Amino acid sequence: MTTTASEAAVLRVIDEMHANLGQDLTIDDMARTAMFSKFHFTRVFRDVTGTSPGRFLSALRLQEAKRLLLDTDFSVADISSQVGYSSVGTFSSRFKSCVGVSPSMFRELDGFTPHIGPGENANALDQEIHGSLRGRVHLPEDRAHGHCFVGLFPTPVPQGQPVRCAVLNGPGSFELRDVPAGTWYVLVHSVPYGYEHLPSGTGEEDIVSVGTYGPVTAHQDTLLMPAEITLRPLDALDPPILMALLDLRTDALDRIAG
Image 1 (cartoon, rainbow, N blue to C red):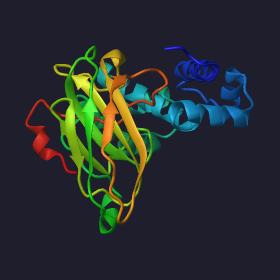
Image 2 (cartoon, rainbow, N blue to C red):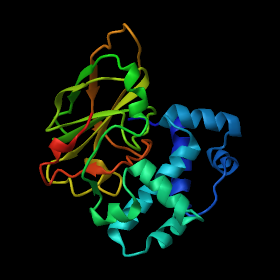
Image 3 (tube, rainbow, N blue to C red):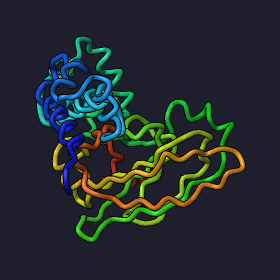
């Protein structure tokens, strides 16, 4: 795939983010690295990655925290400092909001979660439910098959608890029922069978496949069109997958709410 000038500039900034996860990195710093004006840089970064520079940097910091929790014996306080947080409480709160479990629980469960269900605001939306979203996940022949997580999120970044979700045994058809009114993104990621112990975003990125559909707006008296989603390899321009993977080492599929 040919890299455009905008993508090359954004990749330079993402490399700088990786190199300075524990340091202050301002929008001005990033714009200088990209060799764009601050306002042009922010717009280009969002166009290329689907999210803002600040949110992308925050996601990279939490991605590194996930790796450190699994691969080292550093304390939660040490890890929070290493990824740029001055407050352990702020770090822990942000981690739980984006990953789905606390840092200590993430470590205890080896990077998994025993349950994935609707987010905290889902109950408030239940009074405005408008039907189902059906679709199909396709995986190219050169990609290894595995379980596919399908989630409905308010942004293009797969973090926090989804509003609705499903876990497929492999590529194929899905249905997200009782879709609330609003504008949503369907985000899919797949990890090959046998690699579920390697949570997405903590290494082995080339084996993870991802796909996006949306934005799609659900409102009264509107039939949602079927979503056809073809997965592709996760790459450096994709926001990290922060949410903890469902523990499929046991019969966890019965614990999906959505």
